[in-house]
Amino acid sequence: MRPIEQIGDRIQELISKASSANAASELLTLGEEVLEHWVTAKGKPPTDDQREGFRLLALHRQGSGGDPSFNACRETCRELVYHYNLVTLEPEHPEFSKRLQMMGLVANHLFLFVSGKMETQQLGDFCCASKPLHSELN
Amino acid sequence: MSDKKTKYQEVAYYPGCALEGSGHAYNRSTREVGKALGLKLKEVENWNCCGAMEVKNIDPKIQTYLSSRVLSIAANEMDMDVVMAPCNGCYHNLKKAEYDLEKDAKSVAVVDKLSRKAGHDSYQAGQVETIHALDWIKQTIGEEGLKERVKNSLDGMKIANYYGCMYTRPRHIFPEKDQGPGSESTSKPHFMDDLLDAAGAESVDFPLKTACCGGAHTLSDSDTSTRLVLNILQTAEAAGAEVIATECPTCHSGLEMHQIRAEKTLGVKTGVKILYFTQLLGMALGLKPKKVGVHENISDSISYLKEKGLA
Image (cartoon, rainbow over all chains, first blue to last red; front, side, top):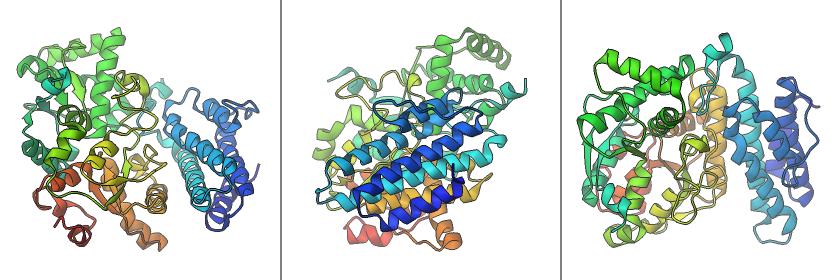
């Protein structure tokens, strides 16, 4: 597993330079690697299962177990999968480049959300579905 | 006339703390849009903080109580059936309190005890219905009603509608959503798109509609918040948007402040404008920008609005 910062750097490169459908597969894999970091940090081995045909969605489900605030990136994961489908199923589409760029930006959001969350985890989650600090303390 | 159309004509209005401070433009524009549409708002008397995010982290039952007091005043002292909260944080917390009081006996016991101590009637689940400003306008006026009332079309305005994280999460506290045609979706919300499109705008396909803006981390980890916001701004621009429409004061302030901070600290400038959906609807209804508080926004959108014939 490469360091999470390198994942972010690679996503940035792909946002600015990607031009082929191969980049979509790489962005999907990068998304999986981001979630692997989260799951590993939670002390679990990252799953190889799939949900709805995608490992990314299985990893998200695994990562949100016991941590409802992680659901704040559920739609981001689903958008990543949706854009992967758009790019790979319609490589001749006139908006191919735009779709690929959007996929990169969505992958970047997943990276920023998860890496940010990993930095501040110990401060407690001030998020929509946050888990109370006192329950951790009791 | 549908049940909701009638029921939501006059609602108890819970602005919440943010709308008296950084989100004042949202407060002003919500009230003005209500007036322009002939809808009535009765502000909840002597309201208190909903418990926001911080209280919930210390003790969620205290947050439940704080929100329940607002609901109790509306139901028991004002005899209202509906509470409308434009702030996503308040809306979320009132809905959560409703859910907890319906499902959790311990929450009921804590709320009963604290209500007695505070000297007011305890709120009972089901006494009022909590709605968002989007529900309020969508159900009472709707797209057709708006089209009839538009004086300055938003024609030519490309908008990314940004709902933020609290409007739809967690799904179980919003039982009225995901109920098929006519209801709001938790995975791809569309009420704001529907209303602004009816006012003449073009909503772009925006994949980060409900993504995190980093608002809650803005003090503890500002750099992450700036990068998250910058990514939202850049995604909106890549989607072709000239404007991001907001419906949450925390998201709105975060987008505005971190747009400036991204330019200063990361050297990345973005030009997309940030406006509350109520400001956009207000201008479409013929209200002047000042009337809907555009001058209270941090980001400057006046020259853009002039270009569009709205200022």
